[in-house]
Amino acid sequence: MAAPDKERTLAWLRTLSGELSTRTLQRLDETLPWYGEMPPGRRSAVGLVAQAGIASFTRWFEDPSSTPWIASDVFGAAPRELLRSVSLQQTLQLIRVVVEVVEERVKDRDEALREAILLYSREIAFAAADVYARAAEARGLWDARLEALVVDSILSGEYDDELPSRIAALGWHGHGEVSVLVGTSPAMLDVDLLRRAARHQRADVLIGVQGSRLVVVIGRAEDPDVEPAEGETTGVEPVTFLDIARALEPAFGDGHLVLGHAVPSIVDAAKSAKAALAGFAVARSWKKVGRPALADDLLPERALAGDPLARATLIGRIYRPLQDHSTELLGTLRSYLESGRSLEATARELFVHPNTVRYRLKRITEVIGWDATGSREALILQAALILGAIAEPDERKRR
Image (tube, rainbow, N blue to C red; front, side):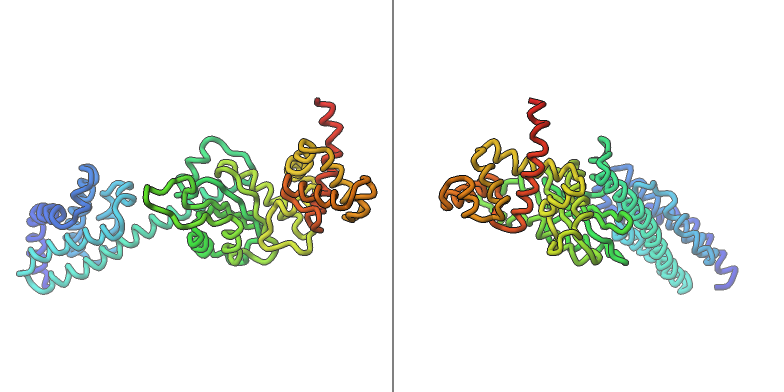
């Protein structure tokens, strides 16, 4: 375009600025439902963006080399919270309306001006995408740091009243019980794969990397306490944490994988984390340990390694219930284990019939849930009896 013609076109565009802004706001109200539903403050901010786009086009038409400044010219007038309330799709709809209004007004002008509008609309669309990409990247980095802080707090067990709000800021969708899974971090951690696998199991996760360890806090994304409406049925059984752990297993590196016990809520997750970490530290001592393994399946190894939670669990779940229920059952279990799990030897020691021993072992299983006739469970029960006997004198002193 010749210089005199361009100067005349620029002068004409400047006189149209107010008219184009008014038409654009009217068109936004007529064609974009989300614009009309906005509160007045945000409508005003969107209007400022539209007006800035029109003014910026005039400056760009005068000097097309000013492309790098489009983003700051147009979006700099908008408050920061507008990026969180207006999506990229809505922003592109806004740009389309502005371009349509300008095109309709200048359609009778020369071809060079119409071509300039097309070029400018492309640049402004890329500028909008860049603004939103930078905002998303900044939010992603912030979320990653916040998530690491939350997981660190859970692992250490040292957190304040702000933990629930931090978790909520991460968009946590877990309800009710929580369990912690600990394993080896892979060389290249695919966080998206991990989250996608969790969603397929109707679960939500918080992910943290602690050196070579990968820690995942698991919560069910569906609330089990919500009753279905009358006449409706959920038809879906809650997924167990062990099933969720199996689904997440491919995202971990080689090595052991240990799942802590379920706790009532995420603020109690430190207890599950301590159990999982303790189990992960001693998992190599059990040759046939599963992947994933339950931390409670490693109670004897954890107790031998000095885990106070494991000792308290063994005493509280096995020794104390048997002692409170019947000293006869406790004595039978001790004799059975010390005699090499022989029914006849136990019967001779207790002066009873082997069927009596068999009946008492069945009652023991009903009381505590462990079967003394299994080799692995016998080890767990033996450790519980030893620890209970060691702790017994202290209990008597306190009484």
